[in-house]
Length: 214
Image 1 (cartoon, helix red, strand yellow):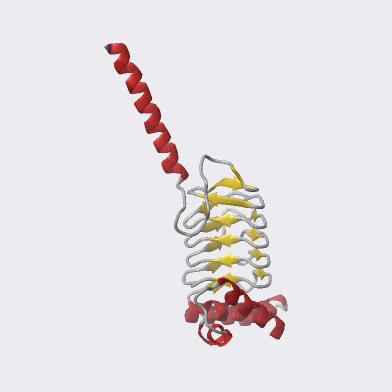
Image 2 (cartoon, rainbow, N blue to C red):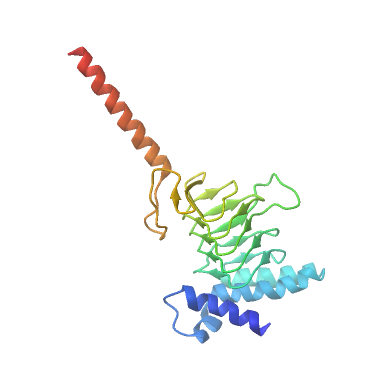
């Protein structure tokens, strides 16, 4: 238990430049409190004490604004930055060293039974406001842009952006005509780029028509 607590504190210390001390994380960080409550609730959930597990998780939700179902499976060193509005569904699986920003939903579509929620591999980052919906996998070392809506599998070492999300970088190679260094601010919009391409083509065709008329 103490080893896991230290690992969760380490995750915050490594990834949050604003943190000043381990005591600050332990006593003041709502995301750390939510993860700690999840680990207690998950212990009860695995032993069939579902009411106790949900009581712990709902109490943590009221205190932190972060909802983690006790049935979810979460690896070591998860970091939830800020955390308000984060929702993690019952059959979600999260690997090691993952990062979630505020407003993230790891949820279902309402169309699946059994495994209904996504699986995140190791070292996955999900940007603020992103929604990952359905029983598919986001591969190791992948990034989901802020406000993206992911409805299909994301391969390892990839970056997905947009609504619905599409992969724009895979294994360091651009898939779309965009270059992205995901930093929560400079995020490309593939839909806007398609509109810009259509405008450019329309302008080209209009010029050809004008030349013929003259």
